[in-house]
Length: 464
Ligand SMILES: NC(=O)c1ccc[n+]([C@@H]2O[C@H](COP(=O)([O-])OP(=O)(O)OC[C@H]3O[C@@H](n4cnc5c(N)ncnc54)[C@H](O)[C@@H]3O)[C@@H](O)[C@H]2O)c1
Image 1 (cartoon, rainbow, N blue to C red):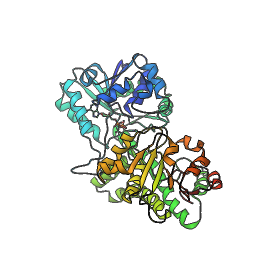
Image 2: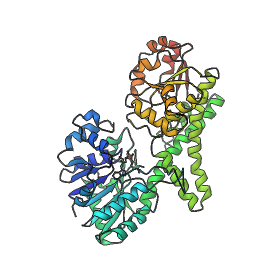
Image 3: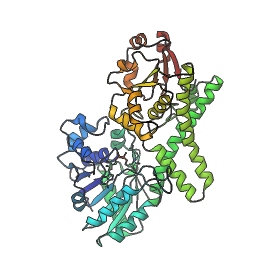
Image 4: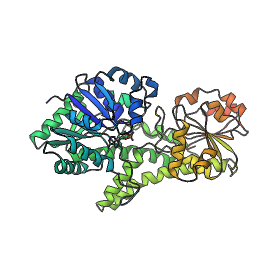
């Protein structure tokens, strides 16, 4: 069975880039990405490619190539479902903020709504693909909903978790380490569905990089991959504190251990902590699943990864306060970066939000520059924490569109995102414009200590 028409529900950080690449590599498949958020869809359809709702290097070129040819963005969810042979569910699965599992479990209401909508409007057989990151066994719930509320058509469920990393999404999609497809290989229909999805990816992914498994292994592998990645960050961050207390240097330690081929050098960069919409949410979900199954030691083991990350952010903010003579009241701290990592405009769970919040509790003024994040987003991130009134957030946090303006007159600079452009600034000019002593707290260990110290900065990095 060769798929001719795909619908993707959810035009976010995963749905948008993923479907753009599927459409680019499969010009014969019509790919329609739908979303309830009409502003987001309008932005995806914007003629001006700098207005796409997601910033990802190289995304604009792929959209330019495929959009209007076989890639479409629309708010007409029902029509796209009816038209498609294969439907990807790529909606958000945030941590629950209410009821059982509050603060831990994944909130599956958006996924369930999609399943009900697919069941309601489908009048031909469909292959339904879980693209969102979901708790193990969710496919069973989706199958139940589809079978019990549908119109008697056949639904095959596949799990196809997405492993792209924001900032490098286009490269990750073009040359994936692996594509994982979980399905029911015990039935003929299941086998056909798996093959249909394999064929979509085979347009550009080598056969040996497409892995097929049972559906539960696929669902669990995504949570596990994120847990392992986050665990490495928390591991090196825990050692950064030990380095600071002993005179060791975490970058030297990371290099020394990373040269061991069994350990490897990646994801060993000490920092103010990980952010992003996935690591924390997925680990909390893993912890919740383990707890629900009575596996308390497993739950505690993974929970520590989150606790360490929270500690690292706190420690960074407290270190700023302590170094600035134990008071930041009335002082200005310039933030370089607000996004959770470079080359994305995504700010979800960014360390910057939490560090700003702690400093604002101490009545510091924060002036932020980020090349891709605007003031509205920053205020909305702070308001989401609900720590103080919206007016106070506006009063204490200013956004600057020019980095030099953000740092002018500041008592200290905190680097929260590793944007490459920060390294290219005229640091002498910045030093001249700041209060003295001029401090730099490098939360990403990306600036050049030697250069900054030569100019006269008090340079503090993580883990030394
Ligand atoms: N962001 C990442 O780097 C990443 C990587 C891998 C996996 N994931 C997973 O992919 C999923 C999506 O993540 P994201 O970052 O793209 O989220 P997102 O919030 O950017 O996008 C989700 C979109 O789904 C839309 N939506 C929700 N319910 C809908 C409905 N019923 N009908 C139509 N549209 C609906 C929302 O309006 C939103 O635009 C999550 O499960 C996430 O864990 C994310």
